[in-house]
Amino acid sequence: MKILVTGSAGFIGYHVAEALLARGDTVIGIDNLNDYYDVRLKHARLDRLRGHAGFAFHHLDVSDKDAVGALTSDHGDIAGIVHLAAQAGVRHSLVDPYAYVTANVMGHLVVLEAARRLPALRHLVYASTSSVYGSNTEMPFRETDRVDSPVSLYAATKRADELMSHAYAHLFGLPQTGLRFFTVYGPWGRPDMAYFTFARAIMAREPITLYEEGRLRRDFTYVDDIVAGILGSLDRPPQDTSVPRILNIGNHRVEEVREMVRLLEDSLGRKAIIRSAPRPAVDVEATFASVEAIGALTGYAPTTPLSVGIPRFVEWFQNWRID
Image (cartoon, rainbow, N blue to C red; front, top):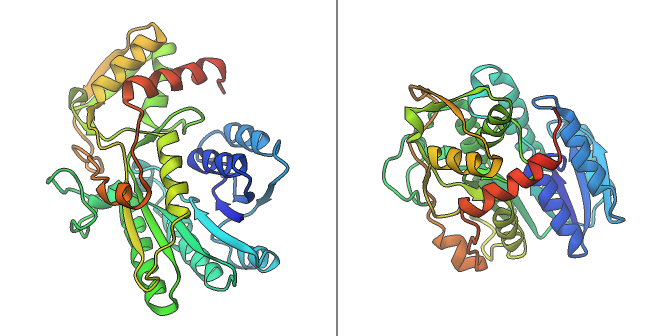
């Protein structure tokens, strides 16, 4: 099949594209290669993808309706879309809110418009986020929970994507699945994520800041498990295309952030210098995914605990650095 992967130079997009290519699919990748974090890492991911004969890359912005429309018009045989391009980062939405509306809201609309005009399209899978659960306190988070109280603009833009997808399913019968990701980590990860910034600081003997002394809890999900869930979802389009699916995709296992730090210390062979600070308003106390729905649909069953995933990340980190 020919699959369009948006955000193909990004962390999850790179891993998804690589997995699709490994199983024999043709992948068209698009990415704007913005400088939210070091572009050298994005180019390094792309270099690896370009080693596959079935990969073609287009440097364009997903919010550019003319460029995306022209590309999809040239590839009417696209059978699947994995839409992962977005402005990432919860805290950065306090710094540059406009970037989130452009990339996440306009970008999603552009993809929806392109998708509904593709004659061979079987399924659009797009990235949402656990952040849509906002300040919910009942655990684990379930897809049926209310999600109308976001605590960050990032979450609000992703919830807007879900609502737009609902409208396009109703109006056009567009087959879609939205995946709410829970704290994805692993090799080739994003340098702005806590595990990555902590690893850098520990190696540089610089202090790290733990909110609430590291007692915040996260459903850390290893990237290989995430990719398995994405591909499993992509391969199973909804039967009723008038209602889009929303699925959690997480590890269904909650760990305190300070446990993640301990595992980094063990793997790096160096102790962290820790400072504590109050939790920022955009951060939630805990995330915890119910994964029964995606498990029933795809057989999704994450197999990588934090105690295995962090050493794998550190092995990559120590062998490939952009410092």
